[in-house]
Length: 76
Image 1 (cartoon, helix red, strand yellow):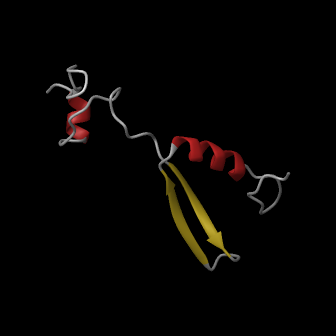
Image 2: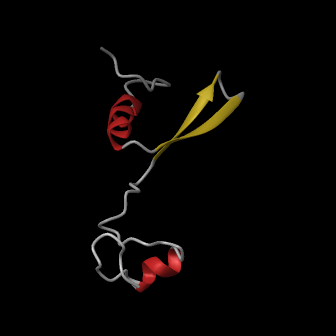
Image 3: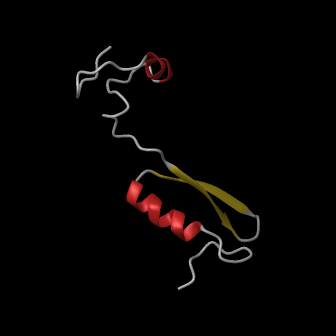
């Protein structure tokens, strides 16, 4: 199968993983997502957040670096 953007061949492994794909890896607009857990309170509630924007993912990755016990905020 050929990529609809560059007309290059789509690798067989990609077609097996994503049967409906129409683009090769280089032409794909999907980036690796950044996934993080958000905990409210001590341990009462946890939620998973998926960040799809690469620029926002970079900012949040920097904020999520622990700077102390239990802290996930960058100290200014």
